[in-house]
Length: 270
Length: 179
View: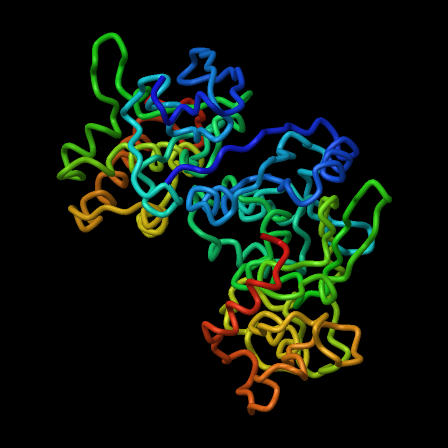
């Protein structure tokens, strides 16, 4: 199919883009690489009245290691750039990030798709969302009200639903320097695994990974939950029918159609 | 223009650089790059299949890298260097490029619908990774769908082209013999 009509706006700077988004509110979507959004628009699953193209903001296309050993990745950096980044730009402890890139789509998708787009899209099967939660990344976002930093653990609410406001743009992702985990000091953190380690090491159910994986497979948005924890909670809402059922381990849990529909109706990201 | 051009839509003037030639197109923003290439520029070598990024028939090069022309609006391609399958053969003599000849020699096509996509995928990939091993080619080729050949002959064609190019000039040379 062909996409529904929309108006196209090309952003010249971040401030102009966020001001335009604030003006257009829910009618606008940000487009960067468009590898998820255009497919959804072709199917008319998404019908934004306005597209704000931020792909020209080259200042958001960067990748480098900070002096403290952390890794900063600009939102417009493509998966292919990360995949082919030399070791000195990616840092010694982040080989897992480069190794994960080959699982994203295929080469022609990775040449266009961006890191920030993948995270803001918040597909629960996305490699970047998983990496960000597992490695305790922080996101920097800007709106007309200024900049703020959001921990990955508090960013994702559920399928396609994030803490980003409609007038906010993701600027960069900051991964902290690799370190041993606090909760399971005996096991190495994911970032410290060698490049040759199989990806399944990510799924070893340590206390840390199970909490993160729990988010990725959970259906219920955490804001509906009465749980007092600040971090995302994979438990379903206490008032929902699913609360009384005994749940399988979160990383193996399958989502029923009814649950997915409930989430879709509460999702505002689409 | 036909109906799908969207005369009722908010039309824009965009300038595209396709195969080294500048084109000015008045089109609706919702027009994807593959539709502009085929309908407005009449470059029908690029095929369109699934329109959601799965089949790869619409693969073209944007700034030298293979991309899905159905997952990109034409307006997004303004300022970029677009290369389509029409650029491979010599435009004056019609002589096929080495990659196209390799596809012919290894029977890398049957019905041919997917072939432009595979050619541009291989063209972009080999330009970046001229030393690619057969296993890498096999993985990259998985990006596109072919329902005829079973892929084996496509992998062999691309591998043969890469091997021939490596033997012709020192590894690391950046000039592309297909341009």
